[in-house]
Length: 472
Figure 1 (cartoon, helix red, strand yellow):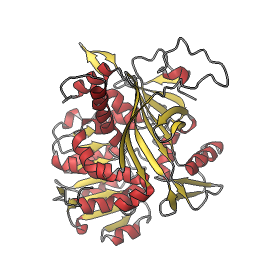
Figure 2 (cartoon, helix red, strand yellow):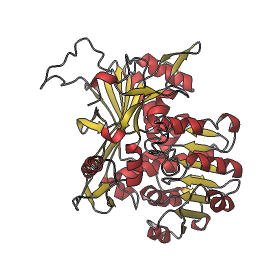
Figure 3 (cartoon, rainbow, N blue to C red):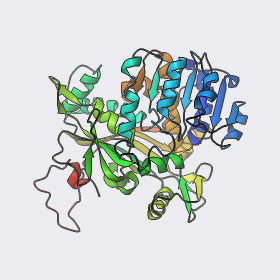
């Protein structure tokens, strides 16, 4: 691992919104890799969780929940040109914060596009409006009017974020290993053309978290290795996925959006109630939850290949997530209570005794069938690399740190997503914190082993077709 030298000068102030597991985990990385002083950092949080960590590093900490009525009066005096607004919150509108940062000339980064409370679950709003697709379209609608403005990085954690860079690395690896020679892609169109040429039909963000605690989960308790409120919110959103051009028909409850880029669809059911089949090298085949994430839409959109303005290729892309086992039981109980959150919540950190977070991208349909590329990070390695982190949080905090450095190095990039960033630069910064980086080929497909217990007519069907075969 490289030495802990400074990587970037943070000349202005840093304002951090939200200080849960990711905020607490990224603070030591910021102080390690940025030329700044704790006195120039301010934290605004909805509760006093993490106050002790802020005190440990001598950073100002204030409990003040932000609302649509007060966010401008609270944050406005704290921001000016050259400052950095780091949004790690839940239930604070990313779009409004981007707007404020634009006004103030501040740089900005978040890990997902958040709405105000109820924005994901308000039944008075259409399913399309409360989807990640809908919020992404609203955020990107600001792009044209603010091209070349101060950099605002949307949705750059582990996923969404890091996985978009893994996809580019995986495409280059597959091209090398299948004898596809062409100049290294340098634009969105060239990356899409490479994916098309390789025959990539499906991309899973395939993650298996095996971290285990020494305190068993109790009834009436939601346990997780990262933000419980964040996980619950996205789990209650509709299942969403980028929709490939090879797909023959929509799933039974699949719907297109009546606006925007048309790169994705949604299902009329919560992501936390939808399981899909996937594969990682350590775990092998498993069932994951089709939780909505920005990367399912952004990667599909970025890799859309057009000829003469007509869409000729797009892969199907979605998240397939198996959280730690205690979180799976928590979801089962949560869903059984008609999506009413348990009275107790517990974020696993110091009580974790073993386990690995295996997070990567699984690209399928090419000449070598399936290729997984990603991070394999154990709890022991995470603790050795950085304080106040577990294996899951460190994959996120490393990506936040790397995205912030990229923004400082590219301060006039305007509004961008992970797919727009230089993947080699970001991975060079984040990789020292990601444990073992693995690229592995496999023969797994969604049809492998199907029809063993009960007969299925699979002979005449495209193995990559989502609607018929990959939803459990």
